[in-house]
Amino acid sequence: MSDRPDFRLEHSELRGDDEFAEFTNVDLPYYSDWRGSFEKLAWATDDEALARARADVAIVGAPFDEGVSSRPGARFGPRAIRMAPTTWASDSAWSIQLDTEPYTHLTVVDAGDAPVVPTRPERALRVIHQKVSQVASHGAIPIVLGGDHSITYPSAAAVSRNAWPSSVGVLHFDAHADTGADQWGNLYAHGQPMRRLIEEGWVAGPNFVQIGLRGYWPDRETFAWMRERGFRWHTMVEIEDRGAEAVVGDAIAEALDGADRIYLSVDIDVVDPGMAPGTGTPESGGLLARELLRAVRQIVGAVELAGMDVVEVSPPFDTSEVTAILAHRVVMEAITALAAKRA
Ligand SMILES: [Mn+2]
Image (cartoon, rainbow, N blue to C red; front, side):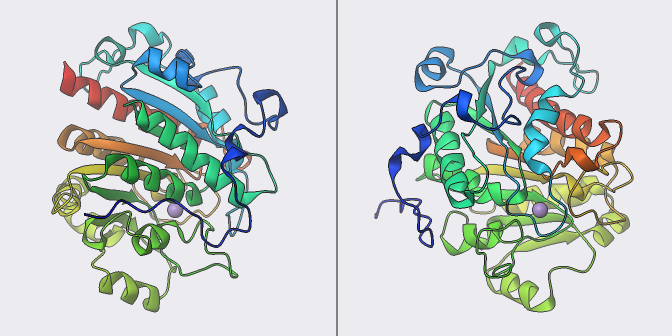
């Protein structure tokens, strides 16, 4: 059996393994915010702290939005999601939905941000990969706060690489398939990550399952490529016809048909822009917030979760923090559903 290939970013002109340590927290841009952790949880930002914490789950920030094709701002996502109104008393938080106290049964830490700096997009993808790999190698399930959707490529690749030889399927909530060949020549923009994950073999096509697709992108040709690779997808129209719970049930079975674990990628634009306006590429006619939260509980309750991200929250376009709060609650529902399984 051959080894899993390395994550090489083959098209990058930037190389070197020392990039991860290139900047200290002090040198990072202001929006890489190290003052307030997610849910006021303890920080565990380096190998020593992660080893000591023995965490079940670790939050990772990926403040990157240089892959966007339309409205930017997702680099401010990790800060806004961390600062969203919390569950109020994180040490004794209790979920009405699941009748569970998440932090009684799970150790959750905030691993801080990947050391992303602006103007160096390929370096950013590499350090996001390294940060997610670091967290996963300590046995914690990474929950990555984006960032635009291009961060799913380095993040899911890290999770798949860490899980190997187990295989990872992906459940991908999005208005858009994000399987484009390139965007103005960029192979790593936010419309391409799912294509790269398949082409490089991090996820098998039939275990890549998309939920919530709608609108006018990508084109027929791209869907033909997806069909060729065995992708499966469930459009908004199907959800309208059959209901979200039935569709999500099918999607779980498809993603696990040959895979052992699941990476869950939630593009907040799967939700209707009326309930999630703070995003870069809004598409009308999406899920209700409550349908997404229920789906996250359903999925995490049913699968072995290997990793997760919540992406495309763009605070400059948000209103009254509603999108940041929803993203925060998506993370909380995953954490609490994990805790409920342990309880
Ligand atoms: Mn997306």
